[in-house]
Image 1 (tube, rainbow, N blue to C red):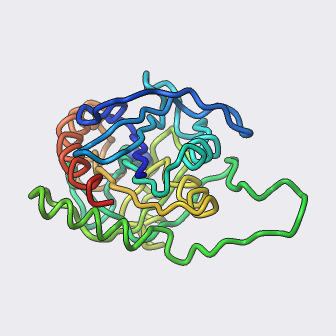
Image 2: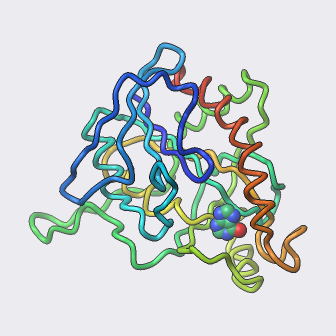
Length: 245
Ligand code: HPA
């Protein structure tokens, strides 16, 4: 079963025919929201709102471990994350991008399931953080839906909740990041530890600080407007991904 983690602007999935909702408790605390189980295009799927149904949990306070544990424990085998990002290079506001790599700049988050201090030390391979199969499935779905989805990009994960300075974005760009967001890590790494295939559809909702029309500041009104229109495209892609996943 495919799990969809919705980010800002995607706290519900109108096309999910909800069969039941479940509040899950985990050894790591409470997930961000109840899990919504249902079907899209006749296939089972489960949806989780990363920031809570009322969008009240900021990126640095999301309980990523509880979210991934709950989804895995309730039968998910793959996770498709939806996340908004600022565009640094090779993308424009309104674009949908499917990153192929990431760089983690976050700190102070619970980043692993393997920290009990008991048993052998575990290291997981993370050479390619996003599942090639799930990425391919997203690209096929977007093609069939007639929605442009850019293949490839490097996601720079930052703590937030504040946005970046121009110098910080310059550094990310020098490092090779093409987009910046606040939730991509440790979500992707925890999914890998849990044995779940993981991919992310990133919605570019603004130019990152100092880029394009964000030369002087990043407009919050612009972000809200962009979120609304872009999420319609995301929903259409998801309708086609679920039956293929
Ligand atoms: N920076 C970090 N995270 C973001 C941005 C940004 O400009 N836009 C949306 N999420």
